[in-house]
Image (cartoon, rainbow, N blue to C red; front, side, top):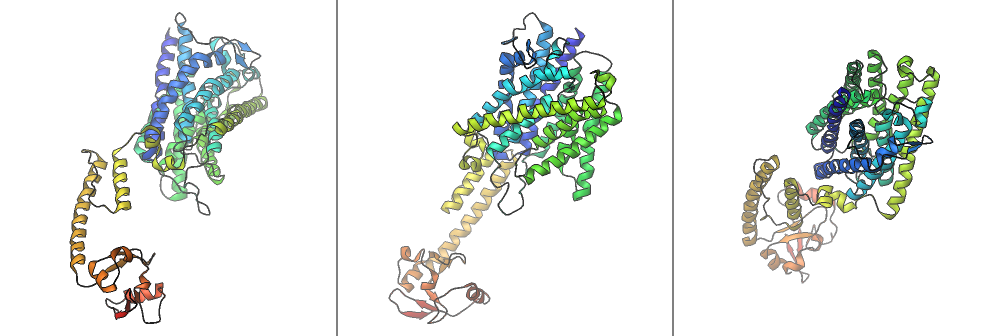
Length: 533
């Protein structure tokens, strides 16, 4: 009974990874897409739980067929089997974690319905079958999956959970392409900044709590190994975070928040595979190298033009692959108890990594290319520019209303519009100040217009870039002999020239005229007559 209670407690802790990923990803994306990112994390949890209950648990833990997939426990009934219920709940959280990794990577450009499709085949097909290969014996103590039989070890899922989710994310990124403006042609890649980094930091802290249940619960029993597992987990994450902190200081002279976030997550991912079978110092080394590898993978992806919005592939694939290989390099053979020597264990770990890549990446890429051919996965350019909050969910925000009014004013030149003010919010305060500025501007413009309209002098306005008339007062109509409709849009050189023979306006002429408050020129009326200007 103690084992079941421990597993239920750990399942509750692992569930915190879902809101953790939601906070992390929402904060690292732009505000116009934050609601979309958040709702994807909620939706994929529902889909993954339902599919894992209906088919996933059976494919993963059912009666093994040649070590490839399970054939029982579909539409699971746990009414009288508390041990199965506890394992199902714990593994469901793992399935949800693998699934939601994709969400952050493809943020800001993937259609919501398309993401639901990806979440469906990840949780119902990709994760359970690879899980069968590596973990089928967890429910009965007998190694039935073909990788498990060969001696492959992945204690809490560096590959089974994290790399599988990362590989699916990479396949999706290759199909949908980068965000608009991320890789300007002929220019350096442009960093797209997150909207709420404190929220992302909160997400990382929630993930840390979830990870304690993630790794601590993977023992499946209450024993004296759990404290060591949890300490190794914490040290691995801390090592990754501190290494990235010092590397950031060394390279740039300041600490980038994303470096600390991804360094700690990479360290946690890396130590997950071997936290039960390594000593304290190796745990620190594994976490530190995991962060370094994730950083280098992230840089390489940018060089290849692959746009991962939250560095999910670098963290979960890069550190996950390293962590799985580290089992063979650092794992105590007596604890692993596979009967393999050091070289043999490394070889099996490599085989598991490669098979995970084939299962997670190659199969996902094929499926997504087929789906994309008939049902485009990416939103339209209009939707991406507008933001997925509005385009996909009609979820308006006070900042959206502010930008909408500002854009409309820019297009129509209507200064009478005012932004709705939502009190007690930061955007509401900005809107209030904006309205105050517009009041002052409108008053000044009206005063200026009154002076211009009643002036006896002809007054024309134009821009240096276009050199066409923008506004003309009544005196200009009378003096030049054109109606207002004719003057607006007319080239200024048809009305004013430097002398009788000059017809060209250039930057040198404008610069010359602007140096002095008064210049003489020749004006040309509609009837062809000239007059001094």
